[in-house]
Amino acid sequence: MPTERIDCFLDTNVLIYAASEKKSLESRWTSIAERLVHDTLFGTTGQVMAEFVAVARRKKLLVDESIDQWLIFLGTCPLVPVDDAYVRAGLEFARRYRIHYYDAALLAAAERLGAPIFFTEDLNHNQVYGSVRAVNPFL
Image 1: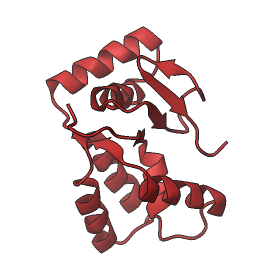
Image 2: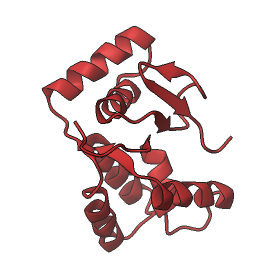
Image 3: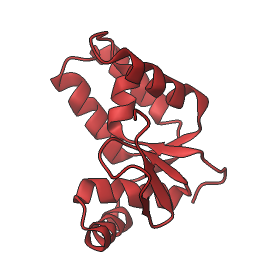
């Protein structure tokens, strides 16, 4: 459990918009994502960090040195490790809300950290899952 209250939990896509060195991404979305990264105390997981690396490298959105710097930064954020409790909680959320496991695992991680909001494009905007509200910051 975190010792400090966090503001939110950020999905991988939000981090990608904030970090991308390619300016072809939607600039309004980039601005919103950068604001969330810089102005909030957000939580993350090993899953988000791994997805971030995979997407950034596959789509060539960042050079490896920038990815390294982002991983250092993300490592300073409140973090839920990918362990058996994480996997079981994700499965429970997936069953309860009938959503994809990976989205459910991130919701469970957000709840474990005490995050009231999960910023994502992948879930129903403003729906509450457990104690966490999913919000699409780009609407």
